Length: 538
Image 1 (cartoon, one colour):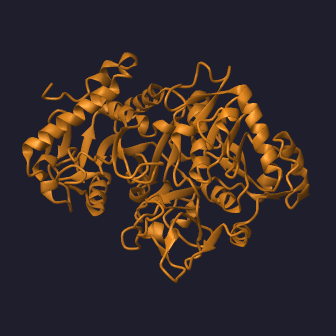
Image 2 (spheres, helix red, strand yellow):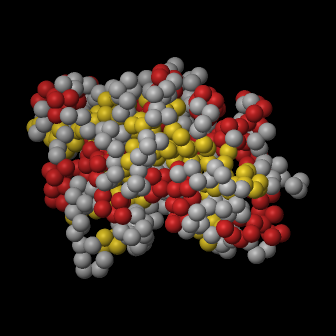
């Protein structure tokens, strides 16, 4: 094997059955990866310096094709069902052999990375891909060890083997279709094939941490962004993709801890990653300057189009997908915190994109309500985040990240409740970043400037001494006024012309909450159950 990296690493590749690859590139620099991406015709450099690539058939994650190997390690610990699909351990072995044989026919790119800023939870991850731009994505998204750490790394705690051009045969390989993401907890291997969408790498590693850290370190793993104010106050922003985690946490007046994945230990909050993966549909310098300025040399932009006849990215062109994204190191954000960690949070925001248009722009939750809405994880999937989603769809995603939870959601909710009871001064808010004045198709999406003002008021403690009202059915307390926000939008019912239609929609949403929660009722406390909404009509 011809090897352009460290020859001593060959033994590690042998363990992964990849030592016969024609060429193995180890830990190449970003500029080298960009050069190879362009030379291989896999990407194009824009005039802002970012490399623009096409992820091919898949422009988003494919949750139905995510599997977990069913064996002695996982049999009684994994939450089996529609999220974690069982995969036979023997079939995994044969599929792994087929994938590694495929990769051995050409070039591979190897990256020594790490996850978890907290030293007690730090985990080494070795990622093998067949694409230079995917290797650049990994370099940008995960923690980047020093050269000395890389030289002293004999083996990773976990390995990711990604082969986008390998297509499985469901009849032979036990998959649903030709693409797959399979986690083997016993062997500490993540196997990905058939899809070049790099988010599969990122989220499969997150799924591993969601299994390991609560069990091993009693750490609450959270699908959230996080930042810190000048006074050291930490804020968390929970939510699915498209609800505003990245946008709302990128605040020039606050230091960014991270935009997506964190752990909450007894000491405080820490980032899992070393980069950001931001949606950039309709991105503009005016509305999201920090993300705009982060798209430069070394950044990877997925599935974006160019203005005709130029090298300028057209972020308004969604002819490929609305899930255009950019991956960049966290230090590309001007306000990024030097060490990506913070203290115990003072404010927690549950971001929900309410396509029904019935929830207030902001509500304050008590502990029972916080646990209830955390377990419910209500939002709407927005266009492009997953394959087949073209307009908002009502969804309940436990813990605002159901697709990434190997353990039962109650495990994470119990950890959250425990922390809220230990730190009673934490404010928990439910923030609607969705629609007002009507449901999707009738009303309008709440302006980003209003949501920013609402978040700012909560962070600055300007919602403590204002008058509150109560939303019927959901029993949510919401402020009647907020600085720099029109008073009329604070009460959602007032924004609807047809009040009876609003009441009907509110009841409909409440029944959807209750129907979703039936799966949890036998295993949770009365404190959580009493927080459920109570529809006015049967």
